[in-house]
Image 1 (cartoon, rainbow, N blue to C red):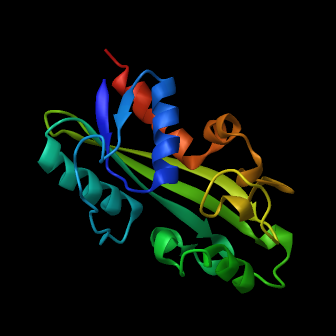
Image 2: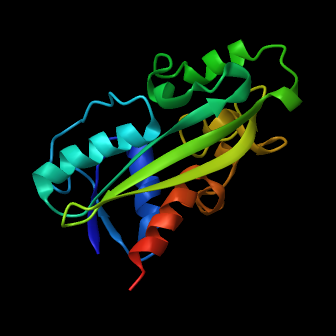
Length: 190
């Protein structure tokens, strides 16, 4: 089965493709599908934003579409940055903003989670939502070279950030991996 991925985020696209191709699904980028679009995320929840993106692309291609909206929720910061994760600060300064806001906060109070909402629209226009999370803590500095976004400060276990994991290790525990596993299980049902 082939589906179009409604994202222009290269890091996210690589992850989505790798995870879904492991389940036997083919994923096209917007460019590969001949689409030049960047749907505006105006929702106040991850689900609303995922639906906005998927619906806009579906209107153009009328074939299966997948989209995701995801982000980081830090408990000490009342869930910030949440749905505003990609717009929380200037590019390159988002992690530093969180680390600054958490200065002096002890490790045990730095709980956080990555949240992902995947929207899938089939060729007939039927919509399904799949959610995934990954629990962890915010470290005290950037560690690791893999991944993207907040991965270098998000610890999946003490001292080990998402950015220190291999792609396969990350995809096995990540919020996106968890949501996409649910999608793949649903699509494989007879």
